[in-house]
Length: 69
Image (cartoon, rainbow, N blue to C red; front, side):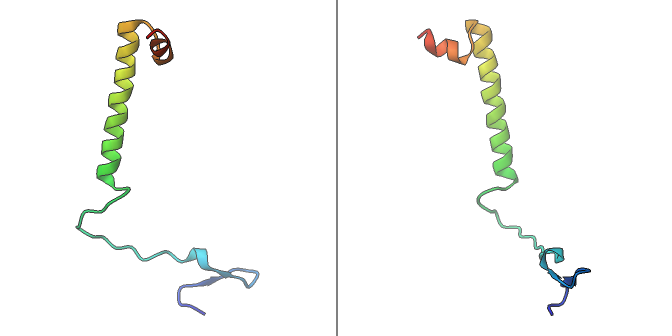
């Protein structure tokens, strides 16, 4: 039996009850990190405001704008 493992009331090994070891690094990481999430959120806000401005200035939504070109 591994240390930290838990046996439930039916005698089965519950591996999901063991928490993984956490570690923190000061080096920049690629992929999903706080900087990528901030950039994604800011670009989404810029896109949303741009779509609102397009609708205000043209009087059409994004689909109406492209069909009127």
